[in-house]
Length: 94
Image 1 (cartoon, rainbow, N blue to C red):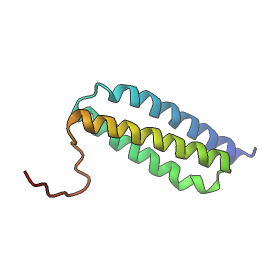
Image 2: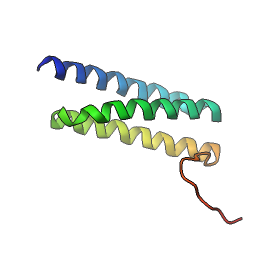
Image 3: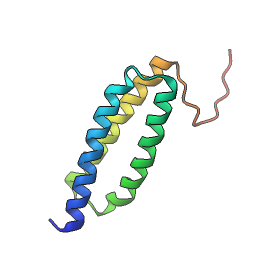
């Protein structure tokens, strides 16, 4: 594996561990804490997404796995906090 591949592997592994840690914390996070976690996730995800084109198929599959785990966490937190996500403008009928 070349130096770029080693660096990508390290970043991916660190991010995967971060997602696991944050997913555990999210179970009891306040709304403000969740917003911070989500913003940090999006920032880090964008950085790795930009690099993922150069990864091999196994790394890409693992990357999709990490993103799926985070999506499950998001779903759980949104249900627990009552759907606080305001990324998209949605008109609701009462």
